Length: 143
Image 1 (cartoon, rainbow, N blue to C red):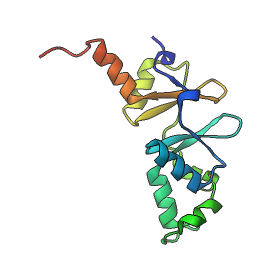
Image 2: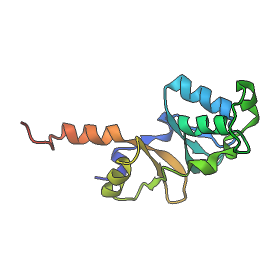
Image 3: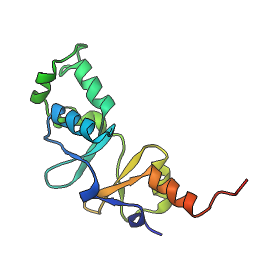
Image 4: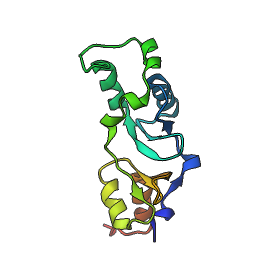
């Protein structure tokens, strides 16, 4: 079995581009009901993952790190590139990695970004899809 078996392809994944505004990102996440999404550059490389928490702390801390709040309108001024250094969590796994490596990474996060050997984003594997697979295979003993 390989990682491709579990991978949800890019065309079926909600993601944002690194040049999207903070407001656009919040709106897209809210509209789709996600608390975190992959961030790609315009060439399709995986850049990082941004979460609601990352966006909230950016809003609270402001551009210079000073504690304050921002008006929602001002969020149009800021691009994800303004905060992406803070989102280095959730590194990708390459499509050629082992299933063991994938499972270890899935234990740490709700989804694992999958890239090819060039760093191009090709999809995600959700923790749910891994658990569902093993549950359906009756890996767990009946009690």
